[in-house]
Amino acid sequence: TPPTAVTGFTGVDTICSGTSTTLTAIGGSEGSGASYEWYASGPGVGPVLSTTSSVTVSPSASIDYYVRRVPTSTGCSTPTAYFSMSVEVNPTPTAPSAGGTIITAGTTASLSASGAGPNDTYHWFDVSTGGTELTTGATYTTPVLNATTTYYVELLDITGGCPSARTPVTVTVNPAPSFIWTGLTSSDWNVITNWVSGVVPGLTDVATIPATGVTNYPMITGTANVGPTVI
Image (cartoon, rainbow, N blue to C red; front, top):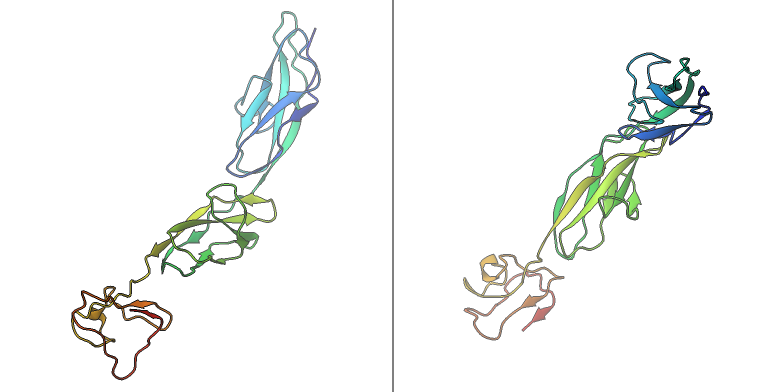
């Protein structure tokens, strides 16, 4: 019994560039036995892509695929007609550019990305794959951070719905200065070497003056930004 022509394909017929799809010939009959011939350049044109009922392809642009059955049983020599199907390839954006930043614990960071094309939108995540979207747009302001954290940004082509790879963006969080008075240099509040951190505390910083082990106790002359103080 001779084979009859394929009448359809199964498989995803719209993909993103850089990905693949597996097409499987269905319909018709293999008769007493048949192999397959798959082509991409035209019916019978170019190399045979597969001789089984399925083929996995990764086209870089939209293209038609052609398949026919070729009888393998004795006495049958005429291949069937070709069946063709189009696979549409949508563009995948290049991953965006984005740089990390360094902040002090207890503050936020403002992150930005670039590289979007006219049909691309930015999407921010806190995981490298999957996850829940944090926000859209070229910039993202983090919540208050107390530990180094990596965020991820991708581009989405709105015409075909294809996402780029995600770009990691790391916020390095340094410890907040420890505003402990030592008085090693003098009694002057505004001298940085009198503080453990090497930074004079501001109005919102909590300054600590130990009861013992202090070389010189502080004296404020002139103007000083004195916030909450623990003695």
